[in-house]
Length: 252
Ligand code: PGA
Image (cartoon, rainbow, N blue to C red; front, side, top):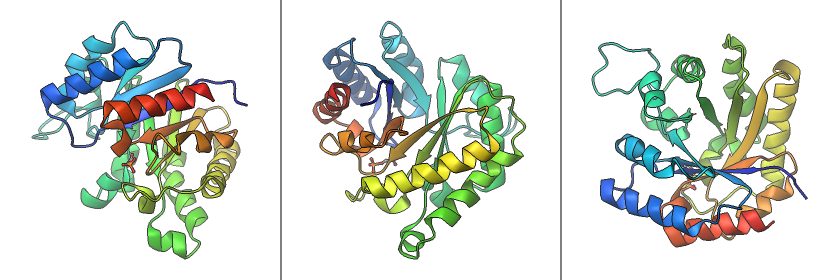
C-alpha cells in the first residue's frame, strides 16, 4: 500500500478549556508510540498554543496548527490574531477557509486569499478547506463548487517552496456522522489533482479529507492512493478514540 507519512490533523474547534486541553494533549502524546509513521497536527483554540508548543517540543510526531488567522499583517483589529503572532509561538500550520468560518463568519474569497498570503509569508503551511453544501452535492455540483473555491489559488503570488495542504471537507459530512464514501472522496481528490496539475505542478500539495472521520472509518480513506491525510474534528476530542484512530491508520 502507501509508503508515505500519513497526516492527521486534529481540529478541536471551540472545545476544551485550558486544563482539559492540556490533559488531552498529554494523554494523546503518552499513548502514541514514537515509531508511528504519522505526522499529527493539533489545532487547538488559540489559548492553548503556547503551552502545547512546549509540550510537543520533544515529540517529532506532533506539530501545532491554528484554526484561523487574520488577513492583515497587524493593526487595529480588536480581538484578532495575526499569522506572524502564531508563528512566533511555534505554530506551523493554519486552517484557512473552514466551512464553519465561511458560513458563520461570512469569510469571503478575498479574505481567504489574504489569509493564505499571510500564512505563507510567515513560513507556515496552510490547510485550505474546500467542500460543497448538501444542496450542491445533491445537484451534482461538486466539481463546479470545488473548482470555484480553488480559483483563488490562481490569484496568489506565492513562490511556494513549502507544502500546501488542501482539505476536501464536504459541508454535509462535517459533524453529521455521515462521512463521504471513498468513491466520493476519490472523485474530489481527482478534481483537486487535475486543477493542481494544470496550474500548480510546482507546488508541494498534500490532499486531505475531513468530515465525520472516526477510529472505525479512518483507514478506509487511505485506499485512495493520492490521499495524504485526514482532518478530524469530533473524534479528536477524546483521547481513547483519537489514539485508536492513530493506531489504526499507522498499522495500515
Ligand atoms: P468532524 O469535523 O470530524 O467533527 O466531522 C471535521 C472538521 O470540521 O474539520
